[in-house]
Image (cartoon, rainbow, N blue to C red):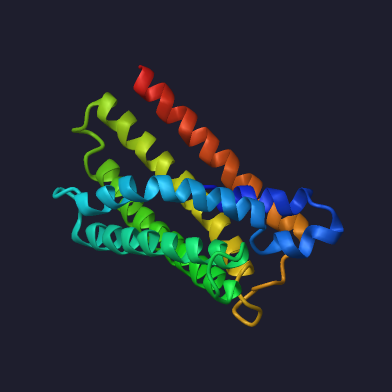
Amino acid sequence: MGLRKGQVALLSLAAPRSECCHLKGHPTRAAAASSVCGTWHMLSFLCWCCRGVYPGEDALVRGLSVLCNAANQLYYPCEHLAWAADVGIVRAASQKWWTRSTALWGCALLLGILRSLRILFQLRRKLSQHKCSTSPQRQQKLRAQVKAEVLSILMDTADLCNAIHWLPPGFLWAGRFPPWLVGLLGTISSLIGIYQASRGANSEAA
């Protein structure tokens, strides 16, 4: 999603106290970078959404994938409108659109977690049912997929905690996290993302 929200969380941790309140939500510079990056990715992301899901996937996984894609796609225009309102391009209440974009981001994260849990359950069942008949290479591949889904769940959970924190006060723990906890969750999410990206690059190189 453009500039990952975990990176915004790291900005809020590093900011001076006078700027902490502003960064706790969506800093203008980080939001601008996120919106610009999001603009370039919207067309490719829309093609990815239209491509749909793989026919071999479980029906529940397919449904969660479609809903997650829809939430992600709706996130971009809300974020762009919020940024445009912040910089004065359009006349609108930017906070309302930031709240909507954050809510959509949180929904996408929750759907992604549910999807990963479903895939994880299926992978563990395959490992237990075909433990003897499956080749060592196949078992190793399944275990790698299990590890990838566990890491995705941890990353999305860390981001979801921050997403709820950035919603208007009154919803669960919204607005209650101290800056150090927001930064810690953002760090966890970013490190997992970097690790997954490096593993993916190594796999392609191999």
